[in-house]
Length: 197
Image 1 (cartoon, rainbow, N blue to C red):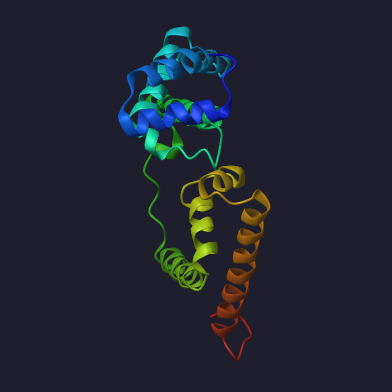
Image 2 (tube, rainbow, N blue to C red):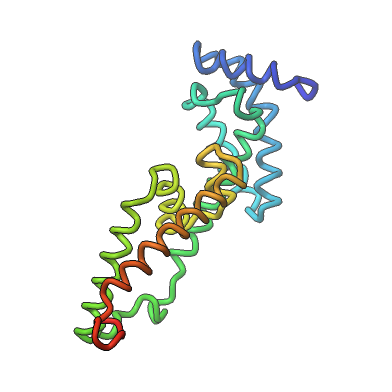
């Protein structure tokens, strides 16, 4: 099995996807499960945790084999990406379980002064209006970056776009939003004093 090439992996995946072929799955499991286990241990998981997670990844292979597209990536890349994402999700869950109840971020905030609250609402509304003017391809990337907190590399991976395209679209989106927000600020300027309203 070690000498199988990517075409053979893709053929075995088709058998799993189309026929639920157990022999094909066993061959893939025997080859990839130990490698995924070792990879997950190198990412810092304990041996038992790594083994469990490697089995989860192989379960994903069994249930979602039809989602694998050999034109987009090799099978090993697809599986290692799933393993890495599972590891990241597990780390996030672990961090959320060990939060300190006295963590300042978890304590209720002091009430905001009414003027500040009104300014904040107006600013939020301006940003929403500016976001609504973005072309869809820019808006989706901005949402992934700021609402989901993804890095440019993660966005490129999820959107199947080159990293340079992701960076360029986000930069263009910010330039456009900055122009809109600055123009909006000028409209709100008091004509007599030249100061913001």
